[in-house]
Image (tube, rainbow over all chains, first blue to last red; front, side, top):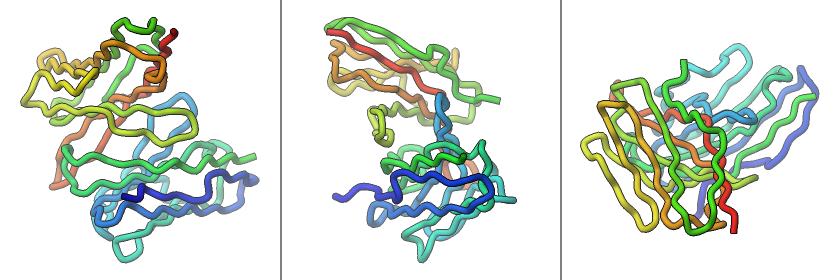
Length: 115
Length: 114
């Protein structure tokens, strides 16, 4: 079974530029998550999709971050414009269901550096 | 407000000994708890979980204990191996509005020395 695919693996941009990350979840997984992990911290949920609908985006800085899940499969996360404090690893995860018992599988992440 | 707390940033253990990683939570609505393991430059991988209706779950060398009254859980690794050296995240899940969200602690870096 193929895992969660993310691209790119690394990205360096200047502040005020825009950037986009892509995620392809495990086939058939209804739930997709985007997490932000700042160095030394645990992953923080940015947005959670169930199929192609958003169920939780309470911690997404909506003035600069946006995300969409196309046809309930792939997802993109965009930052525009980026700030220095956005430097982090962005993790995409997916799970089959949407209960706590449904294990989330993570991709390798995209390491973003904003200079 | 941190709802899932891992108060030990790091832990060093000798090979063959027991590793005990601790986690505390504040939200009584959490009903499922998970441990994830993370190696450098990789995403977290699921290790073991426990439902709030149980107090123990065991899988090979890994056992998770849950004390609901104390809002505390722990992960025991026996015997510890050098390959267990990684960052361990405690996560908690609570179902609200028909879906679950997963909240992570800051992680504990475990180093198992030969």
